[in-house]
Image (tube, rainbow, N blue to C red):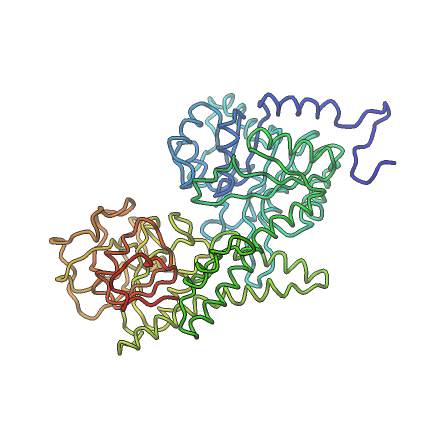
Length: 559
């Protein structure tokens, strides 16, 4: 007896997809299968490059016109994808990008509110490809055929899955992508959801939506879930070296999805269902969230006990079994750990189960930015200074070292809290030249050393009042206590190396010594911490970045 979801034989005893699926199998094996990647962000673009490097023809779909144009120009906007690698694949014809089909973008939020871009009334991306002139109609028609989702043999959905303000899952980007696929779905296509989501999404949402057009999943087309496992900035574990977990709707769905990934990654592990694969991803990130919550709570206890939490953890890590070190910090950041556990706890609540560990870890981790601000306030008070009117320099605003990604970074909340207490806040990050905090754009400052420069001048600008060149309509948000603008002469870079790339010649440079407190949020390797300690009057170190600095310990306050 056939179980639900197994392929049904037709009147001649053959399975519906037998011939088309055999063709798909041959295409995957000889790497001629057309791969469509929906969403060209931190997950999608590296995956598109991985498939293209393996020899597959790849088309990336995105509603963000700027992303589409950059990919087609070979200009990478993802640090893990070198532009020279991207340009080579584009010029060889292995990789191209195209706007999503026009009909699916009408309800998507425009940038910066959402990651999928803005379209004109006609459906074409603003600043992107436009309808052809009549004499170009023939070549345009050929190009448009390749732009169609129906032309793809395999489709991988790599769109964001954020949280709503209520901390409920927001799968609207998945819904929009699936709506676009459903309109062009054809027999024997392989559709794989990679976006992190709660258990049941593939079957309860994706399957039901795709089947609304009349084709049946597992019978007329293949459907599977395989969670993304991208770790931005990790050069030791490129995507091709990270095992893929695959759970298909049927055994054949699992086989085809596994066959595809076996062409590009070192190992594929199959699980019993899409729900199991969805749960695997949530376990991975919930494991980290809960353990980080534990050491963050330990850090709060050690602060009360006047103990160094890093000393305690490092000593415990000497045990060769039964212990895995996690380290505290100013809060969680990134696209996974602050978000994914709440997808799981939400699904648990909807099934009458309270995920108490997850919720408690979330509470502890969410409190850490407030704890950092309290440490800054106390450290200034110990020096008979008030937080109000103090000049604070944040070191690192990316959510992790040596990347430019600021999604969910705790630095954003810390800056807001410090500003709400009346501090004048500035930041330095070698990977993030500009930062949007609420409706203000701040520029990263170069680290410099010179005792004659009086103090920093704010470069905060109200976003709503920017001119077309981005320089007029400025407003001060930093210290304005009457200091003259710093002279451009006699300014030396802090440390022996020149200012990191990404800074413009018009950036203001200010001495670290003139800030009342330096707060290390992200420990980028490009920062010279010895020089920083030498120049700074006070440092609050939330990452133990100064652990190897033998001097100036009296002015360093740890988390």
